[in-house]
Amino acid sequence: MKLKALLLIAALHFAALASCAGETAERPGASAPDGNSGDTGGGTTIDLTGYRLIFADEFDGRRMNWDLWAADDPNNIKNETSRGPEAVEVRDGELRLNVRRVNRSEKVKWISGYVYLKEPLENNVYIECRFRSGQCPGVNNAFWLACKTPPNTTWCNKYEVDIVEARKDVRTGLGNGHLAYHDWKTYPYALDKNGNKCDIAAGISVKHSFEDYHIWGLWYGENEMIYYLDGQEMWRRKTSTSYPDQYYTGVGKAPVWNPVEEQRAYGRYGQEDWNYQAGYNGDLMHVILANIPWGSSWSPLVEEEADGTWMAVDYVRIYKPESLLDPTPETDLPQPAAEVELDRTYSLAEEGCSYFSTEITRKAGEELTLTFVEADGSAVGKVIVDTEGSLLTGITRLTSSLVAASPVQGTQIVPENRKMLLVCRITAKAGHEKYDKDAISVWCVPVDEAREAREPYFYPNIDENGNTSATQGWHINQKGFSDEVISRVLFTSTTGDLSSFGRFRAGRNFVCVTR
Image (cartoon, rainbow, N blue to C red; front, side, top):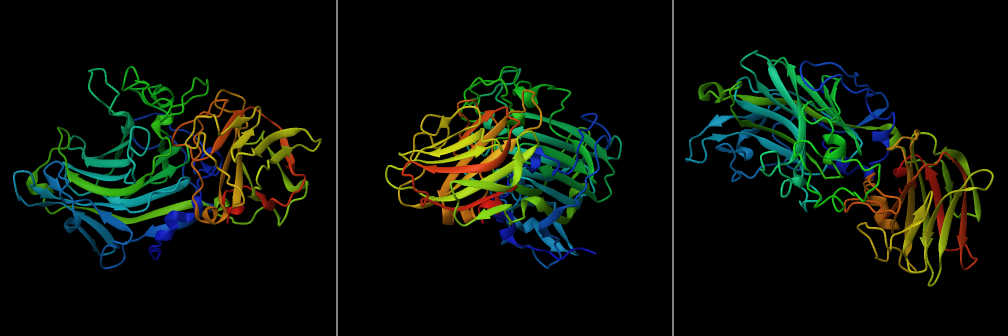
């Protein structure tokens, strides 16, 4: 039995829930696949225990829900194919993306289907689609993510995730599933070994039975993606026979990676723990279902076979860890005292994130400080709103939004006499290797705006001075190694009066300190 279609567009806005699930055991799966091509298998089986279904379209109605979905512009012609709404239908409990021969002009000889969710996908979700490919070779059947939200530039919102592109391989009679990533931000300046412009990309091939329905899935983490087929882990983007170091360095498909955007797009300021991370830097992605005539030597397009076929989509579902949806803070005080004993401790030696927020109304000339301390009073980290309305923060050293390269560099973030919500996230790493530095991040917006906002995207490419990319969502960040345990928070004001502080909350997700 199918689930009832939720069809709740608000679910895709679901409360800014990009958090630390991508870096902790919250993610579905725990080990990487053994190889990067060939048959299915080699990874863990997905377990959605502790996950909540936040969106589903089961296609049980009589027509497409165009409030949720949009079709491609029929004037966007590719492979002699127009992909407007006329090739899309909901029938017999499934979405059908039809392939039809039309011969309308020299440029348009086919129509096929292309639909995408209007709202961008939030991070730290597991998304899956059950579908059967059109039963012919020479037609590409795709479940993928791409950027539909502007701006689309050399530093943001030009990325592609091929959860699968499936075609029939006539040599074997099996389906050949292409799983890949493409960083198109580099296309204007990166050159391949032949001197041609290129995106930075890598992928694997997965064999599967072509005549059957399959469930293709993706854990879409904040800084990690895991590909699945029928619940079995396939790939994590880190392995590539062709480009073994590209995930970390960006060098592979492009032998010498041009550094034009290495700071603005990827936050590279000479820090030793810089990581290309397959080029994803918070690009806003949309879910796409599409098919198109696209022949090759191993999957030739035969017009008589392709005409009248369709990609049959049973459902699209999106899940999120329950732990990221819990709105209950672990500490909640209407007004903090000078010293607050937290209801639980937060260790920077344990993998995970902790969140703290306080309402503030800064008076003219006032400086406000939050200090996170251990039980013995030793300082662990600090957040300062200075007299000019700038932010400072740090674990091992203080960095300032006045000077650190970031989207808010040099701007006044906290105005005088306006009620704001100051939010701090501490991203803890258990190890002490190169990529295991802990981070402290701060974000401050008007209280009403915070209630409706997505969690700011956290991009880990930050140097010790807080310099980061133009896609960083947090206003100020600093990284360093720490194993301290936060047990208390100290509140101070240069006026000696704590009336500028309001409600204080602490917990394990963004929702519980902002809603």
